[in-house]
Length: 133
Image: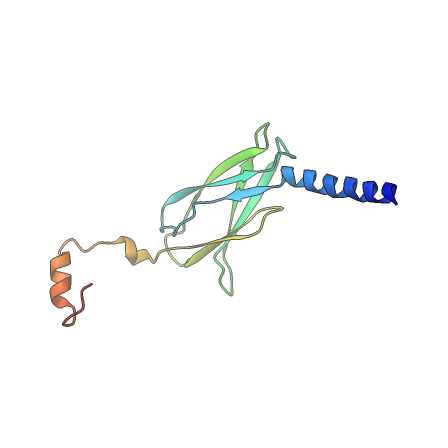
């Protein structure tokens, strides 16, 4: 009976130890802006020197795709730039081997444009009575 328990404990410990070399995908934890360039990072200590493809889609019913290729160093760590599309994407879903997908919203294109002729004071004056913007 004791040998059976030790055998099972060894299997559990081996499974836990294998999780220490798990893959990890990292992207900025915020809303992305059209036209900005971000760093896509990938880690897999079990695959030093490997080349990894991170597939990015727009999450639409008819998706558009981008692929970022990352070269891992001797520690299994790497990153590559990705430029957020200027238009047509409301979100981005990042997919890498061994990782859960990561979804990020993309700000509307016009959210980055500021009308130099307006001011906060003008916006308050144009809002309904008792409501400030």
